[in-house]
Length: 638
Image 1 (cartoon, rainbow, N blue to C red):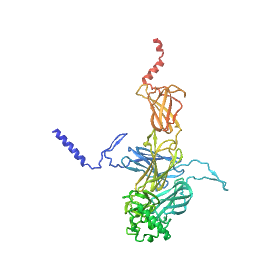
Image 2: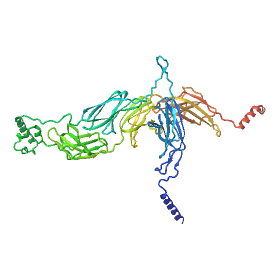
Image 3: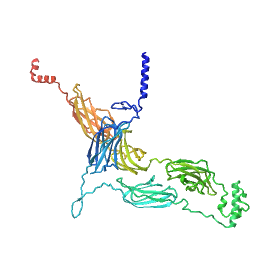
Image 4: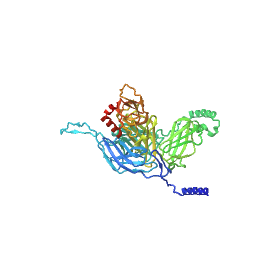
């Protein structure tokens, strides 16, 4: 009976579990070290944010807040405008804190900022605080006096918030596939062109070099095609200037060479050349019959071109190989003899199968003769059906033409097309990159400690302004430290493009950590005889390891201390080691040691201190007083 009851009980439990709503989740099992969620599909409300505060130190601001009891990441969103239209973010995506602190760097001095904090917990749930403000301080400067008649002084604000002004934008068609664009700016800035067949552009090309006279050459364009374009220039402060939209139309493919007229030669010379040529062709190509020329072959031929038509055309391979992208395609095929490589192209709306020339453009290499052919089609429109025809012509003879083939370009994806890093100094690097569509900008940097990626110390700096050229300045790197750098851009459809720089460093680090604020504090265990606890702490100017050498007594710098603690390989700027083996009321000498990730080592000078004395109990105090008061009793006993 008991066995039947157990089976029924288990069955009821199973039925109950099946009938529960799918999104029901009981309380998660968790401790201070881990959290286990019973259903990872469940999303939680965002953490409760409280105690938001900011502390200003000239152009650096520390923002702190709490997410009581909920581990989450830490971001501060800030802008000089309350609308946050051009906001930036700094913080970390590591979800491991309930007490949050983010140090904002790279701010402008003497500037008022609006900000709010943002935290996302594990398995979803985002919370933001209300908007607050802070105003950065200013570094004292020596004013520059002027010789103006009224006297006084002139203080120059070096902060540049104005974008470059673009003027005199012109273009020049160099050939059917190449255009040169020129413009000027009122300050030194970069040179980029956005271009495409619509006002959405889609392609970006240019140079990061700074100049006031700009030249960009666009090649691999489609012949006889209308393009929209605009110039972009960014200054050293990251301000981006845009020109107005303009258009140009490339030349037709045959505009440079023109149509060649058939070569007309003297009839007697032609007859002799024709006779010898036909004899030669008959030896090369026995299948060609002289009867094909008609009853009077020599008298009906008026040009060399008419003779060459009897040479067989190259034999094309079957289906071409095609690699298709969003805005470009690569077409490959083979021929039995050396021939040139041309592709006739037309979008579905421009293709006319009944016309003498069904295609809109002919693209390729007319002067390169080979058996393996490859033609790249550039500037295509994403998600569009195209018709193509393969065409190959040997140096002599007619052109071989394939049947009509079709392909569809893929939907355009956001991508980082190029990037550039500018090392300003060992702590400062400007990361620059280009995307094919407007997107925001973010740099995530994570240090390596002892060849291990310290993901818990990663940080993100983000600019929410959308652009195709991106620039983020990171000014808190450590010289010689190796980092994993990730460039990240996301567009308005939440498509994301990334570029990983796995081992980035600003240079070799040969400077050891600077050790300061060394302090030792000792207490006595009240419940344990002859036991003390000593806390030794210090700080370093860069993340480093922790170790202490010590010995009883007073010792100078030339003495090798005989005992030491274990090495703590956690890289920190604030170091704390607790030692519990010291004797009460005893003098000790110690030295602290820290090494950075490059192996540079610092060993401090010797420091001495006395541990705390064991406190006397009330009985010990009474006995000592009695001994001091009645010490003569010992003499009587003796």
